[in-house]
Image: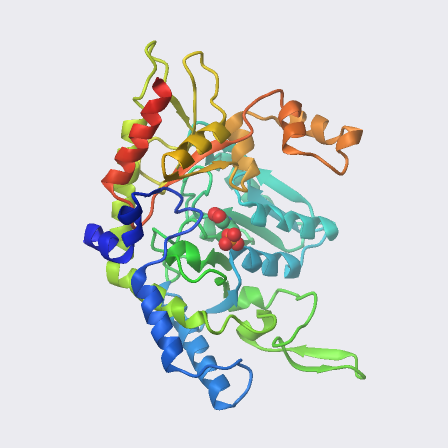
Length: 446
Ligand SMILES: Cc1ncc(COP(=O)(O)O)c(C=O)c1O
């Protein structure tokens, strides 16, 4: 069924002979979604919401219908959860960071394994004198040291608000961190921010069962189209704790110039700054329907099998002396992991092959993969063995006070790799994609 779907919905893949292995960055655009969206725009007169005129009211109707469809897709109770539309997962995270009531008696706790858009929240915490703590991840699987996490979560509160943030799935290693940390942390007085951006494209997130306080994600990662729409799904009780640092068009009931006062709107409106992406929003409902029709569990199984197959074929590739070609950063099994596989290739002398060279050769071979640290520096530092003391002596050199190029950084860490190679599978991937990648990998043995 997925092979037929690939031929029908993604004709460019086989039409161009392109091997797309970058699903963690973005999904591909299915034909159906484009057609349904264009038809809707052709058939309806839509205007800027926030008015009662008919064109505006129709856009509002579609927006609210889309909001309900997101709740429904994630099995989230509308009495308990609110969907706030944002431009992407990053904006959803920023909404939480800038408004969370951090103070000196609170804490921001997060895993080493996080996207920079989650790491960046620490700057909001710092600005309010709130300490940040990182829980390490451990090689070779790059999972969190759970004993340390549990100890940390169990520590008594110093009276302030405490936020714990982690990704449901790593965009670096593909590790799926346990969702049962959500109640574990909440029972100990933490709010939980679950970054689901890399998880939701191929896994069921059941918010009837798991109830994080905040969930961030981008829709283009789930079904490829449209870009520019993400959401924050927040528990009403948690959203009520947030203190927005400003008001804007669309977020207030009343704001006054002479009275120097504003009153925030209720619910999602309080967080949706300015005009929402109202022409794109109806396509989100179509995208969710598209995934539901295929079946998120079917997609999950397909990606799990292909990932297992890829790892099973990549890890035995060896040089003549038996030294492995690839060093994997993440689990070697297909359990509790997603379809993101990250590694570096090593040559016959045991030297890492520069990830930029791998990328260039992949480009030339018509393979889209990604290299670098994928905006996940904690994952990169652990995978590549870059230590805290190396980093702080680098960052504290006077010439690096405000400026550091990637070349400076490379020198600082003594020529160690600064990045890795990432291939990621998704709903349109097939066995031929894996075979093509393995053939490509084997060329590094020559
Ligand atoms: C785990 C994770 N979180 C957050 C983001 C940020 O998503 P966006 O760039 O759509 O805001 C990404 C993007 O790759 C991601 O993989």
